Length: 172
Image 1 (cartoon, rainbow, N blue to C red):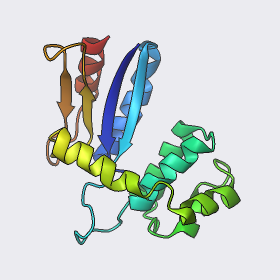
Image 2: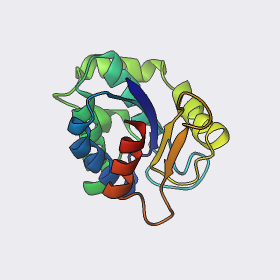
Image 3: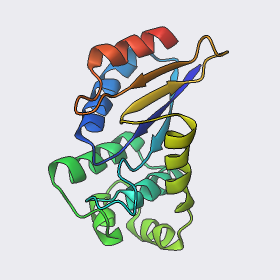
Image 4: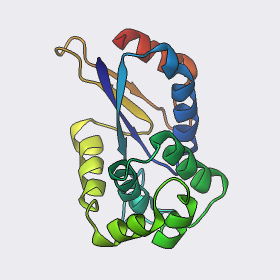
């Protein structure tokens, strides 16, 4: 089974579009596994709104609680990109995720800070280890250095459906 990694930010409209295209294409690629790596395109202390560090923590909490990850991603993208909700507040996130995760357990885990280190880990993995400049960014390690692949968004453009399909075809 081919496994690839995607770096993305929930506040990025290009990431939302790429996510939708990828999910539309994936049924034709049944032997693919995705390692989701949410990051902040504009990490603190950069002055940007909204910061999605709590959304990154929420992703790992949702996974721990056995949530439908597709429903989770769609809810996050909608809340931020379309509805412009204040996802820098835990109670807002809990409301957004009502019906996807158990709200009580979600808030408990969010307050515990169990996954807070994932924010810097994912950002470091993207920016320092994988040379990500724009999101979404797709990475496939390959079997050796000759089969490693990458697909990077371009500033102000994202990635196209055709590029995503070509990336999947090359892995496949």
